[in-house]
Length: 301
Image 1 (spheres, rainbow, N blue to C red):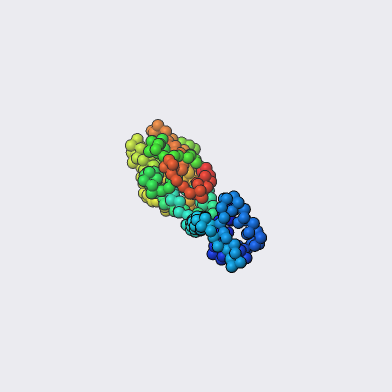
Image 2: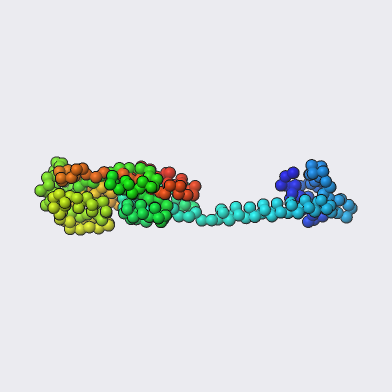
């Protein structure tokens, strides 16, 4: 017994002639007759009475055909459901991204969308603490964050996949009078500088720690835009404290070649903070197969 034979039963009842049923089923009349004979032999009951005027189902045949119609109806529903599922739009992958998304991620996103046109992404820029909270609250499916040693406990309840490391350095333009000065730059020269800072919780914490040891720095500008910080550094010969990855892995066009980096030492601090960068998500967070492929393809920073 097979699904084809169920279809044969339904069609033969509808047409009531072997010849017409065979034409509708696109098989030979002999093939249809042989299949029905085989089914009757297998079941041990007569399903149809064949006369000169046509083919009529027996009582046993009526019952069998009723079940066959139910099977056919279920198959049609399954086919309809399958077609509907094909047309369901892939939900967007909600990604919380810090302000130093690497170019490699952007390149991967564009390349992946070429390969998987149904893939959609929603990127929201925020600081790491906001992203961590967003992942925990299920506002983001995944987050890409920077975490220092003091913040590691905030992600203990999350899955964390490391994709890079970085630290703070002092940046200035190549034409700054201290650009070629050997490290470390003396504290008295450092305190003479005007600072243009990127708005970032970690930078604010670090600058506050420096101020607690040496007195406040002369901060003339703070901005969320790299371009504004860079232009201020160029015009006013200002310096900036930036994570290495914020320069190297910026999402926007940031002129790395125009900057010089110096080590931040001699500030009276135990150590310059280092950072781990990674992908966070809730344990057992359900992603679609396409979303999993994208996340697994994110390269190290």
